[in-house]
Image 1: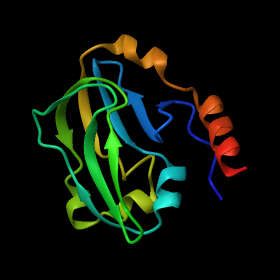
Image 2: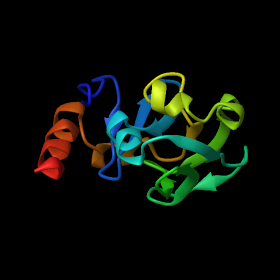
Image 3: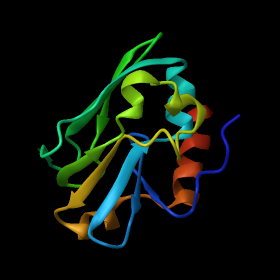
Image 4: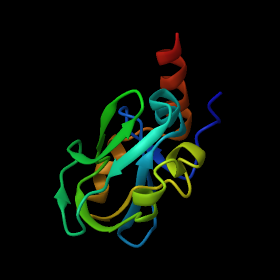
Length: 132
């Protein structure tokens, strides 16, 4: 059963989350719902530090026992850090999608893009619609 999505971040319709750090950077990852749909995650292909991505472009790849899925950038930016722990322990995403399972940290190119994303309440409504 999915938990309520944390209210301190924004969400894409593709099931990514972004947490604005307030300093021109943001953490990104996939949602608890996304990891639940993927089931057991066995590999994460992290982006290269320095990679520039546009909103909606693939930024990482998550591989589970069931499928391989692109992780799309919720906003445009430059990758300034990646969660190296996922290389050894990709299941961190299954255990803690909103915490230890973060994927990358971006330097925001256009913070205004965040206005196109969903609030936690709107995202939770989207999940409910998808389940029915």
